[in-house]
Length: 204
Length: 204
DNA sequence: TACTATTAATTGATCAATCAATAAAGGGGA
DNA sequence: TCCCCTTTATTGATTGATCAATTAATAGTA
Image (cartoon, rainbow over all chains, first blue to last red; front, side, top):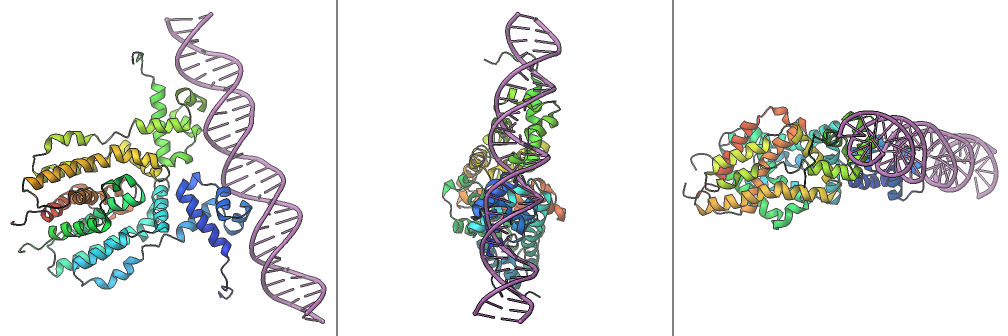
């Protein structure tokens, strides 16, 4: 099976990309099939129904084709023994490095999570929950190794990711938050610093 | 001015509350005037146009009547000299204590912030920016007092608020995040702990 | 090659349903 | 009566979706 995969049917992909742009700017209800067709450069909106069941289906496919974006975690797997400063900095850097597409996907997910619990659930499962899961395991291991003092890793994992969120929110949702001019690297350095000092083993 | 406050014009308030419910569940575009009328228990959607200019105006009024919800900061003003553990705990507790209405308002703002930059801007100005502003001033003062080591307060203010955000997000947007059963108080205690130890003055 | 038969992709026209908004007409208390 | 509130009825525009019909691409046959 899968032999005719010579040249992708560009259309489908074009429509998906146009749909991401329109959905992320206007939301599910605000976006129109005709608007997406226009954005995709096709002359008839009927064509969309050739490739997709309906608007709902199109939306789902847009998500499916973009949500598994947080693949960086996979690369973090073999880092369980590496020292915290490096791992946390790397993870944070990956978290804050968002390109145009990722920003759109995140905006889309956040916007729709409000209206569609199932979108929120799927997103959490493949994104944040995976990152948090790794962090819990990693921080737990570092406690075992005596590099961090014993504590509730459910909480510290949340806390570390959280420290970076306002910075991320400034880029994706609330530009006004960037007003103080703090750069990603500065904030990352300070955050890692506070976090690690805060979890330093008792005896120095 | 404001003298005709004879008997509550229940209608207007009823419509506003119904509108908050519908807008927060379906978003601006997803909500319909008819749906809001039905939710408000009035027989005709035309009545809404007696009290409000149009859908846009109604939406704006819903926001205006609910956004200045983060009033807790005002009460924090006179706390500049109080020790960090108490202040941070209090602030965090206020931050995490969200009732039904506040949750709806937050969901509404987040959902629309994606689509309407001006909503995002107004929200940030009266909410997060005010809290961050207080925190920057407070943390700076604590550094002066020698209770915290010198550092970039733009970053630490962000970081502290951020530490609480995943917990908040679990309640408002992504219920799946609550799966590990971590309570608000537990997370708050751990967070304050990490944060303050992380900023402890050098000489112990 | 050349001609034909099938399938895939694309179009413009059109549908009923629904939308926000307006117009017109009560209704009830002063 | 007048005025504030409320409803019924209706508007024109737009929505998601379906349709028949046309074009482009592919496969089969000789």
